[in-house]
Figure 1 (cartoon, one colour):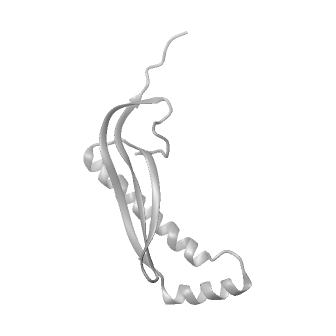
Figure 2: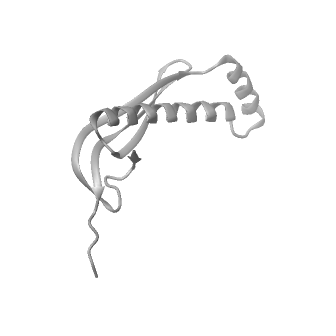
Figure 3: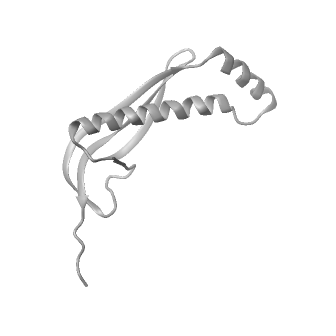
Length: 111
């Protein structure tokens, strides 16, 4: 599955648009991670525990979006975007969404 943040895939043409696809996950913070993150907030630097948590959430949301597109018969997703929102104290939703399409390589023109 080709995933693009642009509205098209270079070297391909869209032959069918199948519609909106999305994948989401809601993740809550972990007390152990919060304690480590609090320590890092005092001394400064990257809060690696939260970076890892968000990376895992992003991958899960992408996987779910790709699965939905596959069920529709798509071989690509264009216009992919991410959104986050807080749904409860200590919990956030990560949403991946885009347009499922069927693409095919553009015919090469001769010299």
